[in-house]
Amino acid sequence: MKDTLRQTGGGRSALRLERRFAHPPEKVWRALTEPAQLARWFPSEVRVELRTGGRMGFVFPGREAPDMDGVVTELDPPHVFAFTWGDDELRWELRPEGDGCVLTLTHTFGDRFGAASFASGWHACLTGLADLLGGEDTARDDMAELHEKYVEAFGLAEGTVETTEDGGWRLRFERQLVRPAETAWQALTGPAADTAEPAAGAQVPLGFRTDAVTAGPITEARPPRVLSYEWERGGRPAGTVRWELTQGTGHGARLILTQTGPAGAEEYRAEALASWRHHLGLLAAKLLRMKS
Image 1: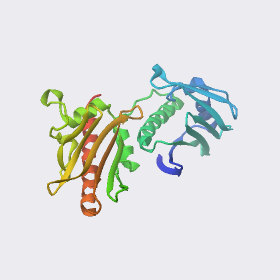
Image 2: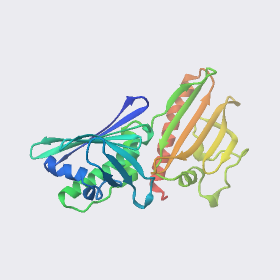
Image 3: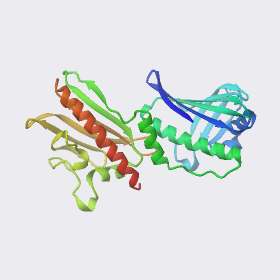
Image 4: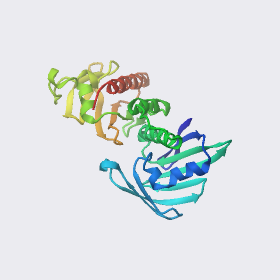
């Protein structure tokens, strides 16, 4: 099993998953292209005109996501099946190996920070495909734990440092979560019964701060989406910290955390970057223990 993520340019990323099956390419090809078999492991119902340039339609069970359209971009039975999936591209390749074959899936997309969601979803789908080919019942993986393993494996937990127009800096973390915004907000603020909802002028709850960053009072609070505050250095305001929970991939909310600071202070900036990295890791672990 080889799962990798790379950037392809133009702000797009390519997720590559490789699996070996103890079945000939022709058998796997039918499971990849016949709608009746696709329905048993693919994430949506598929309608396809099986020819290059043929139209495709994707309908998700229970309308969990909007219907999508696609086009067959390459067809070479039983070796290559490629098509668009909305704005994304999927390429399935089969290579004979011994008595079986190797399947390589390449998913190209624009949302890099959604990669762990896509990888854990395809991991589950390919497990379902293997079970279908082997005539077995599909056992579901723990998607949340698998998601977090991919976050770490792909380096998606790391923050970035940007230079601002005034010569200062901005630390930025973007992380797909495994729980919705309401659950993440509760994890950050504590149970509603134990504390008042954060508001402008109030003290910043512990979940929104870290030891490396001295927090001033809240400047903006819009539960369960936004919390901002000034942070202090030497008893004076030095910049802002902003937490935002936005719409994610469907697995949960997308967290965007930023901290701005003045020019210089590289040693402090590095300390804050490492501290937030650790803090968000603890939040992710806490969310795994919580139910949506």
